[in-house]
Length: 312
Image (tube, rainbow, N blue to C red; front, top):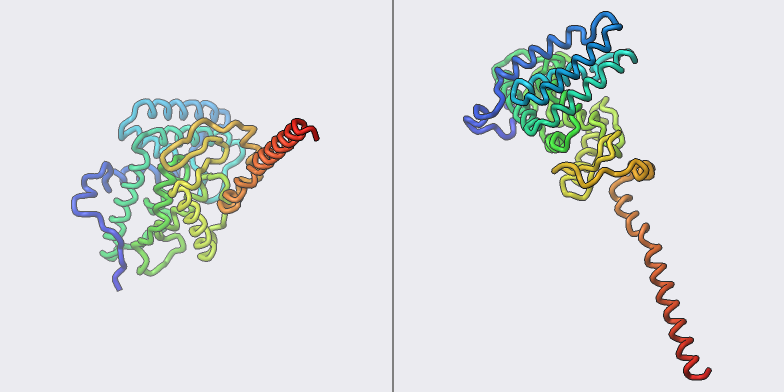
């Protein structure tokens, strides 16, 4: 039975995109090389100067703009993201994390950063469908360019990226669904990667559900579906951990919330939307009591005034 591929891009549509398969392939050759090479100097005494040079390079790319600058920032985010397997030492993390943060913020500052990832995913998915139908060897997750794109997106805290990931929660397309699974790390459907990326993105107030096991994956997906539906409908805003700024899918909302107010909200930040919506009327009850007391006081005063005039 032939795999249903969902919406296919109209002829010529992908050719008009800003990214091409060849262009992306060149980027990911660099990414693979970066993964296999050391990210820090062998001499720890040189870590500080490496960080300084790295951030200076990122700042210059941010100012430069254009395709080459964007590709360089994608590369920086990829090589500095938390490792998929294993961990860094505390000393390494203290050096690399500021670089990762600078690269992520620089990439998010580019106006077309979200469109780049959206178009890139479509290009790679189309390529995978072509490979799968032609009997190509099934790639492993380690060498899936599509999986790498999601790993990078998980580091980009922007409402535009949240929007793309939220929409991809419904994307069931999987080029390798009917292929024999010879490796546990083979590429899978976009909804799985989108769920995983949203979980890693650091959105405040959404409980983390483990992605181990299909039952947990489905539960995590359903949780994010409900959350995204509320955000998309305009019934809920969101913020990223460590950042008091509130967002909707169009961008930041108003002024930044003071840290004091943010601390006071912590206890209720994980409450469900239903609970949160039910709390609002409860918080207004003192006003109604005050009005009731005021009305009663006026009634008593008027009654006494009348009584005085009548000589009672």
